[in-house]
Image (tube, rainbow, N blue to C red):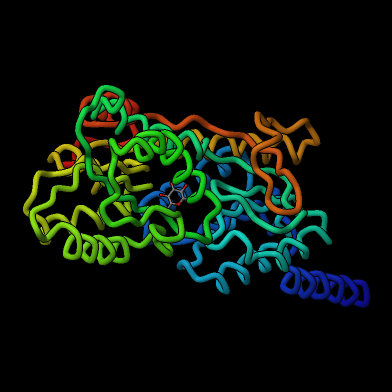
Length: 354
Ligand code: BGC
């Protein structure tokens, strides 16, 4: 009786401790991995989250997957919760790269390694690894597409161009913009490309939170201010698909000229449909399955104490350190190759994009 009581007390204490700490591997005995995603609003993060969960579970981990509704305070508390609930590694795609410092410090105090996923975590030394696509290359693919499609090296006239970039709080956004701008800059300087609105710095063309509606209203303003007199816009360089969609919506109702070249990134379903309908010229395919597999591999290497795969140790300085990174390769996509890269690869079904 007495022994039973003591055992009961121990069990109760253990349960209370578990409730308090969320204790390591829960009932499953498996290592728990936290995955913090920015939002369910954009298609890509849903795919990233799903892929990560599926692959981590297949590799034998318990997964705590959270979406933060694009709200920085929510993401901060979700990550802190992961720290306190016994996650062994935490993978984070940040809403705002610089805003998670307190959670990262708490993770470091518990020796929980952090992997920045797709977007670099900024201004904090407690970021162990970074896995992403080559973000600068995404921009150069877009810029090169414009250069080659218009044969800018041999062009005698002038083409009108506008830019729409991404979220200033996302470290990737500058890489995308600079990658594209660096390819096009010589032609802008020569006058082969003319930015009619004059808006050409990243700050001027950025889109807070990558919002379609924000990109749309800026494009509407530009169209009504600079193109209402019948001037054609020949190129609209958009850093990704959510912003391209905003520009495409604006063109549909605010523009009568000849339809421009429009770039994008992600191969979101809505944008692939637009590519097939001739409303978007290209996109950049970043196979989220590849990134998820790479990150799951890194998690395994960390937990087994093995050397972690990285292929870039110079590019991604987060303000406190250069974070060892693994860069996956982005792939050019348009209406001619979508069947092979998106359908035949099993990324989408035909129904997904019809
Ligand atoms: C990602 C892009 C995405 C954008 C908006 C960036 O950090 O790299 O793929 O289009 O965020 O979600």
